[in-house]
Length: 276
Image (cartoon, rainbow, N blue to C red; front, side):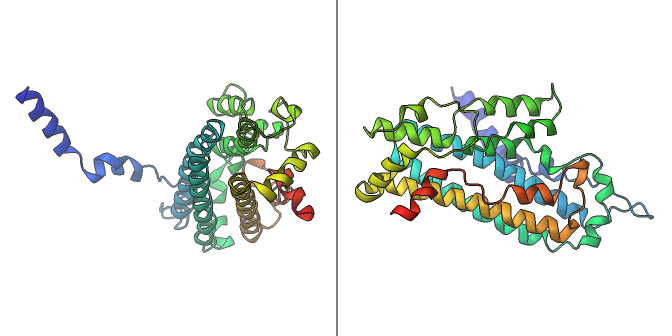
């Protein structure tokens, strides 16, 4: 037993900051594709790569938190759900602030390496599509950005058929004895967000006389607003960088991104505002 204890202690001593966080591997992942006439990568491409890699890490964390929030709601744990939603909101603020860093890159700087991006495009981000689907924005047309048979498309398709955060919220309310419309509880989860008039009547009651449920509602509104803010900042960043040119990889660019603005994820929670 002493030998095993010594071996365990040795392994623990070998764990360092770098080995635990895989820092060498992490720092090896920034590989610019561009080269100037002297064979040196364009200066701003490293920033571009790091910003987008960090976004993918935040998408991963948002999926991690979003799934946990949904499970907490379905388990009836309002305290844990609220705490998790608050964390997601804080992450969203960080995601928005990162755009400030990206906007230090001028259009000329971006154009110096844009051609090296070839067919790659942010529209191909499987994790962002997963995040959208978790929040209820299930547009089947986005599947076209990832080829059939690819691992990314398989993951997105799986999320496409799963319940959303709003579905979890509806089940949370039903489990507490509230009269959630059966049609909402049994809906086709692959459909885009829509308004449910009967649900709105219930929400009005909750806002007026059920503070615990109301607090969850407000956090969902905060989340919806935060995602819309991120979309808006993203659109303006694209416009100031490439205007209305076609995006990389042949993507629609700013024109499409503009069409995604101000589309609520939880329309019932917005619709009741004029009646409160």
